[in-house]
Length: 220
Image (tube, rainbow, N blue to C red; front, side):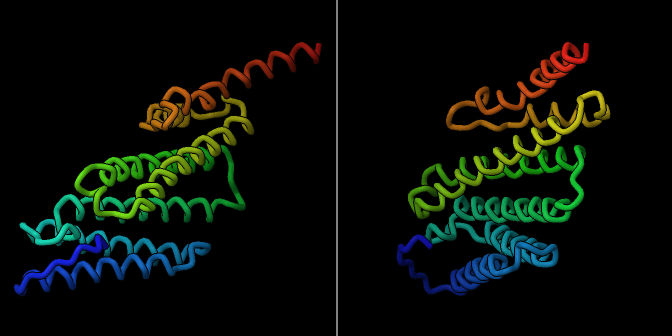
């Protein structure tokens, strides 16, 4: 992955190299699955989990690796990257299965899941942006992780807004109101700041209150 040659004449190094290639192969299997079907997404989740497990085993079993690919920081980042893609596939499955019947509660569930995916990718971005990892991964990886963080944060706002705009706040259960508070409290920092990112969601309830007041005046 790093392109930096490394050589060591030991059985342990050969074993680690084979395991690393196996973990990488699982990611290719996951990427080839049909992400437009629940079965394909389940298979992708299984492959990403196998990849994460392989990298985790290497992280816990091999020390003093001669190459950066096998270093603890790199392997830890790869584990978290695989788990982030697992979470992403689970969100895609929920979104796919609820496409034909999406009420307010389902929209809020989707918002929560999207916010979690964004938070996981934010953690991955923090890991992949630190040295020495950032010096040995393609710049496109760092950029793509950042894009995914912002993309799923935007989806969280979209699904939350859809739920709030389609249904009066008074119709939501107490548990749902608590869920909304958790979404807004989620760590969703962006390049323009957390306050700016949450501002659209925070303004929606007040917008609906103004709409109700206007409707009441017109009915009189």
